[in-house]
Amino acid sequence: MKRFSLSKTLPAALLAPLLAIGALGLSACGFTPLYGSQTVTKGLGSIEVVAASGRSGYLLREKLDDALARDVNLLPTYRLVYTINEIRYARGVRVDNVANRYELSLTANWRLLDIKTGQQLRSGSTNTTVTYDSADQPYASIAAQQDSQERAATELARRIQLELATWLAGKAQPKA
Image (cartoon, rainbow, N blue to C red; front, side, top):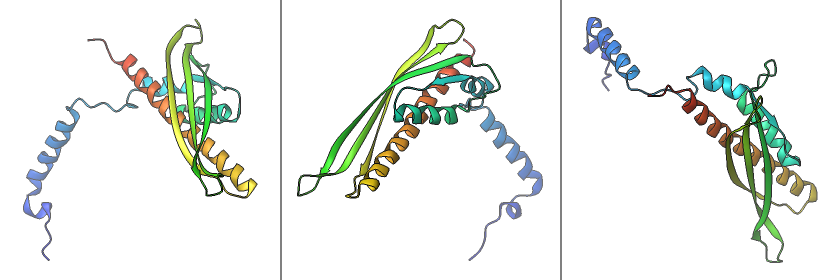
């Protein structure tokens, strides 16, 4: 099998300009990464998250703090408050009419507030659904339910982070 080598077919004098033109073409395409702007990263890091009540509310606050990369050394500019609604549905039923599969649906209704003025800057409702198996052993069933709460909180935090980052990126764009 014959190997193809770009460096052997094109002289080095032609290869360098081609690579430079290709890099120049990519830089002029207008694409800006969401986290390319320091405004987005600093904005996300300056959001203080206030936990809602319950295990799912606490888990969501933990996941949001991680996702937003909260800088505890700086005073927060924004405050994120939310309420959480958790609903569990039995989805799989055995022959003896006992549920063995559940669906957990978490919905967070959130508001982003300016800390200085208390004014609401952004709000939204974000939801996610995960499923889990319920075992016959009580401990295994509880562990599966808690794992589903953690997975749902992780996904919810990721979605809220994306919504906030998109908003901050749009806010940072110069007005045309």
